[in-house]
View 1 (cartoon, rainbow, N blue to C red):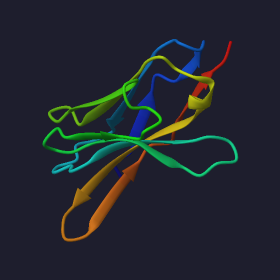
View 2: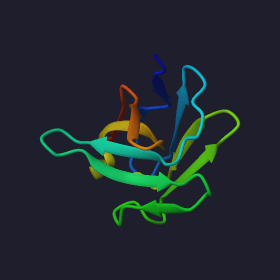
View 3: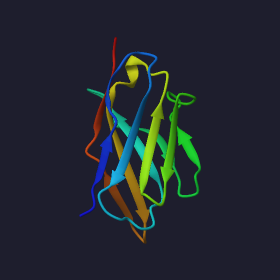
View 4: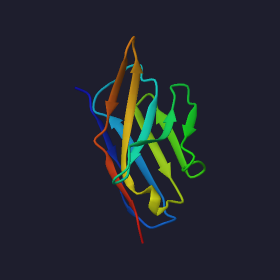
Length: 118
């Protein structure tokens, strides 16, 4: 069974940058959307950014202008470049791949911790 594996999380000071990456453990054909979510302690999981197979992107208002999502279709990877990080960005970040093949098939990563603190 194909799994998604995130990397790049860690501890960073406010104003700093981190780059998250997500890769599939095997080949997944026909990925439509690639997304990043995050979940802070005591809060619901929220959508941070999405990139379609055509390269269109959308961001949560809270990260617009600071985060950039990108994908490599040949490698089945997605990245999230995070800049100007704030303490409120602290959360576990998850990637998700979605395939629409008559039904919706979702693949989730296990999450990577991002902590923004001085």
